[in-house]
Structures are given as structure tokens and as C-alpha cells.
Length: 214
Length: 214
Image (cartoon, rainbow over all chains, first blue to last red; front, side, top):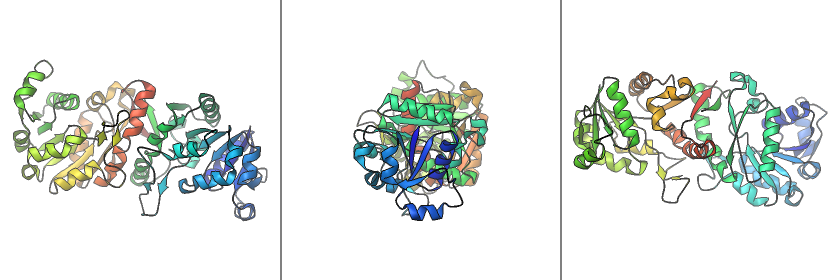
């Protein structure tokens, strides 16, 4: 599929590389193509083209939002809400506020979520929240922990879009994908972040994951 | 050990019965002994005495707070903060606000927690937050799901108290107890509730648990 990954940090790079390796036609979208080209010269294959946020979004069937939570809405505004309409938008952001030090707090929670704010900003897009509860390495290589036996969650209003995303997750090696329900269920996974950060401290690693046993 | 369980709902009954069966000297504390005696006549063994909140707390070495979150602080006030001083207080509450319908929201979160509020109300007590992330049946019989292979968390400021609580959890069958750190880490486990509630909906059961794989 034609996939635009918006965001060129660790998460964006990891997802773009993995999806490219799986045979998808991936474009990395960035605010400043020249800057990003220099920064990523050594870290990402030349087979993955860089483009502006708008150009990347324009040609994609699926758009993955892989930026810091605080930049989510401005990134989508720069990508162009009209050309995102009807597309599947995979939201992997978390509403982390780092301005008060560690651990980060959440700038939206409990009665609203960043997933819902993104869906509200793109009313015709099919937003699916997922992959916001684990570190980048495990997003793309789940088998690095417990032989891949752990759980990822999806939240969204469009069942067909969730089916496409669940299939994509399966192709990356995710064996247990739980559909929590509509986009309001993103509140639950975003609010997992405080526990995730404390576990990172207690276990002294980011290489852990939640498995929902039942 | 001498253990007072404050609260006579499903959770309090389950914990009192299990700890009694493990050989502890358990007292169930309640606001109204006569009312509770009638209500529980058929559901709990006569070997577990009922007492007022204050009497139960007075004679206990460990006090378990097993009431709804909204009643946590008033229950402790009724039990008597002075006689709770220096004791281990196991806080298994969640700050759930059911007044706005389902799913419940949290009346404290992110920058504070009910665990911290309880510690602040009992500055000399050794508060340990635990068992607030799973259903009552699994608190006391972890093997009912995945042969007991799942995780519980502890948060608290006193290492010795956490060691005692971890040992108690182990005696109930909990094989993986993660010490998250001081009582502020209770924010993380309390904020797991929104995901827990959505999972209950998606899986149509309360018989699930989180296992932290690493």
C-alpha cells in the first residue's frame, strides 16, 4: 500500500523502514525536507523518499502520524485536512507534556483524548489509534520481547479501517490485537503512559510490553 | 498476622476470606456492624468477626482499605488516623467517579493520586498501593487466569512495608510483583482503570489481567 509516515524521529524512522521492508510504498513526510535529508543521511535507506507533509499525505492511502503529541494537530494541519479526508489515519501519538519534568503528565485525559481531538480535526478521515503503548523497537519487531506474545490495542470509529490496521499490525508480527471500540477508548491507552513511564524506571528498560491474559 | 479489612463489599469479603484461609487473624471493619451482619449472614464465615472501623483498625498490624474510592478518606477518618499511625495500610482503592455514567472517570489523576491523598491523610502510616488493577476473584485466586502468570504492582514510600505486602501477595499466589517506586507511582496504576474498563467491555469479562512481559 501507499503509506505516508509523518514524523522523522525514532518512531517514524522505525515504522517507515519496517513497512518499506514489508513491500509497501512508503514516503516519509517532514516539515523541512532539506534539514531532514541531512539529519537522516546515515540512518535510513535512500529507497524511502522524503517529502513535505502535504506531498506525503497527498499520495498516500494510509497516513501514519508519528510525531510528539504536542505537534499532532499542527502536523495534520500542515499535511492538509482536505486531502486527509476519507483516508485511514493511524494515530500513534501520546499527549505527553514534558514541560514539568519527569515523569511527563498528560495534556488531555480522562474525559477527552488526543485520538478524539485528531478525529475531530479530521471529521471525514478514519482515525485509528494504535501502537501508542510500546517502544518503537517493539512496534516494528514484536518478537524482541517474549517471542512476540503481548498485546496491542486499536481504537476507532470505522470498522473497515480498524480491520486494515489490524492486518497491517499482524504483518509486522503483532499476534494479539484487541479492538477496544470507538475512538473514545483511546483515553484508556493514552492514560497507560504514566504506568509505562514508571515501569521504564522500575525495570530500567523500554523493552517491556503489556500482555492481556484471559 | 492480625489484619483488618475495612470494607465489606465483594472485594473486602474476598480478601478477608482468603486471608483467613491462609491462617491470618482477620477482622472485617464496617460502619454499621448490625447491618453488615444481616447482609453477610450467608456469604462469609462466622470465623471472621465483624467490628466497627475503629475497633478493627485498633487491633490490627495491617489494615487493608477495600472501599469505593469516594469513601476512602472518610473511612480512614472513621477508623482513626492516630491508631493507624505507623501501621501498614494497604490501599486497593481507585478514584472512580460513577456520577457521569459509564465509563467512570477519575476524580484525581495525573498530578496526584488517591494513594498519595491517603498517605497525606495518614502521614505516619506506611501506605502501600496494590491490587487496584484487577478484579476481586483474581486478587485472591490469581491462578484462575493464565495459571497465575500475570503482574501486580506495588507503590509506597516504605521499603519494609512493601516487602511485607509483596510477601503477602506471594502467599495469595501472585508470582510477579513489580515495585514501581514511591507512592506517587500510584498515579500510574490508578490511571490504568480507563483501559481496564474498556477491556472489560471489549472482552465481555472481568477475568483478564495485565502481564508485563520483558
